Each structure stands twice: as structure tokens, then as C-alpha cells.
Image 1: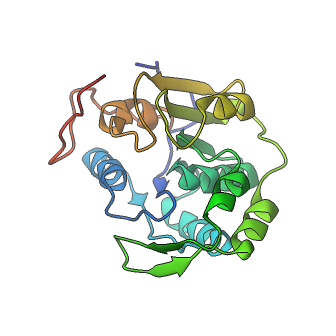
Image 2: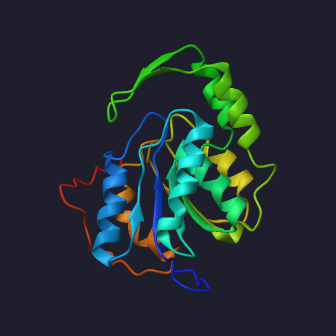
Length: 215
């Protein structure tokens, strides 16, 4: 378990951003909300549009609900969006298997049709997605001490080495055998919230959570 960092003051709330084609009722989103509710900490986890520019605009608009110093958290593409917001606002962020090169990732999905199991939305990835991602991608990551990385060694979608390189110097928790879905997030929520200056008991467990077997 990572020791708690020493932020200037505790985060005033948490904004959790889900990954590509995921949603507000995904397990990770529910666990983050439950942990925040346990602490009495405001938490917002919006259902994001599939278009990245719209998703980022919606996420940014919800920050005002969380006070002056929110903690950003995001998984995969949500980790990318959280990075964009962190770089714009100088905010802290906890990133779960973040999409480091989203344009490269999404380029394999152009013209593919998706259906979102959480929202029911049906959409096709287009070249416009790539253009938006390219325009949004920060030139570099500044102040790596503001970031916490939660990475799985068995991520089948993204290479953890790319995250190590981009966020060099960031606090990092590497979980052996965890895949892209990072189903072990519940046990690492104390570290995630400690990055925002809040103490969640390591014994706390979200409702209806079954811990996956370690490989």
C-alpha cells in the first residue's frame, strides 16, 4: 500500500470519468461513489458522450459542483480526459490504466459500430474522433507529483510502459496480473483517496463486491 502524500489540503470532491464505451454504472464508477459516500465526500461521475471533445466539455462543466480543489479520477480514456483537465487546472489526478496515446488506440476502431451497454447509445467511431483526440492531447505532462498511476501488469489493451514514460516521476501502484478492467480497484481505493488527502480504511469494502482471484 502506498503511503499517503502530503497535499496542501484535502480534495473538496471527486470527479470520476469512466472509460471508452463504459458508463456511470460500471463497477469502478460505483465503487468510487460508494467510497466517497462513506467519507461524506462529494462525488460526480457523469455519463460521458462518445465524442471526446463533448465528453471533456461535460466533465469540465461538472467540476464547479465539487468545490475549489477536486480530485480527478479516470479509467482508460477517462484517465486521458482526467489528464487533460489536470493539466488545464493544475489539479491532482488518479489514473487507472490511462490511455496514453488515445489517437493511436482509437485509430484501430474507425468505422466500427459500438453499442453502449449502460446508456443504450449506438455510435460509429469516425475520423472526427481522431482529430478531436489529437487536438486535445497535451504536449506533455507537467508536475508529475500531482498524479497517481494505478496500473495492471497484464493490461491487454495498453502497455504500462507507455504510462511510466509519459508520467515519469508520478506515484505509481503496479498490480501484478491485473488486466485493463482493473477489477482489483476496490482494494486500492484507500490509495486513490489518500492521493486526495482523505483516509479510507483499508478494511472498507464496497457493496456487492467480489474480489477477483490473484493470478
